[in-house]
Amino acid sequence: MIPYILNGGPCKIGLESTIVDYVAGKIIVLRKGGIPVEEIENIFGKVRVATHSTSRPSAPGMLDHHYAPKVALTLKSIPEVLLEFPVDRIGYLAFANKIEQISADHQRVLSVSNSLSEAAQHFLAI
Image (cartoon, rainbow, N blue to C red; front, side):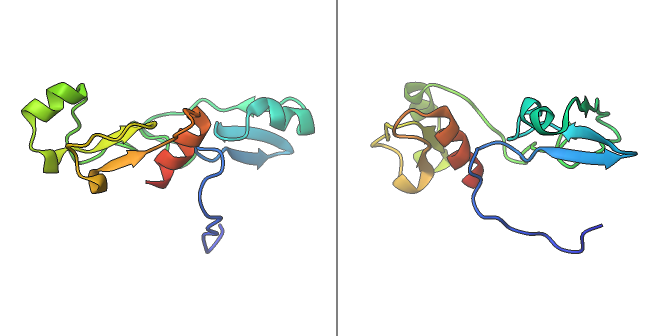
């Protein structure tokens, strides 16, 4: 067990960490993430990808409710949401376009260049 956590700063890839285990001389991928299994296999040869149980996961972040927020989430188009909700109750994630009616504090532009990997990186930094 490691008695501390090393913070490497913002996520460069935009995906969760790949978690691997080394048991009896074999590498087991416990959770797929930013490093593809194929890249690991290019270095170490064939690896096993573990199946996981949602009740007894073998690595962090694998429970069904791991990312379940305690705040209700409603997905709607901008015209609908502006008609139905007070603007101080709206959060807006976008690639480039900001919405004039919503406070800048309630908006995040994930990627002005429409890059999915950049958007994923910024999404995890929120």
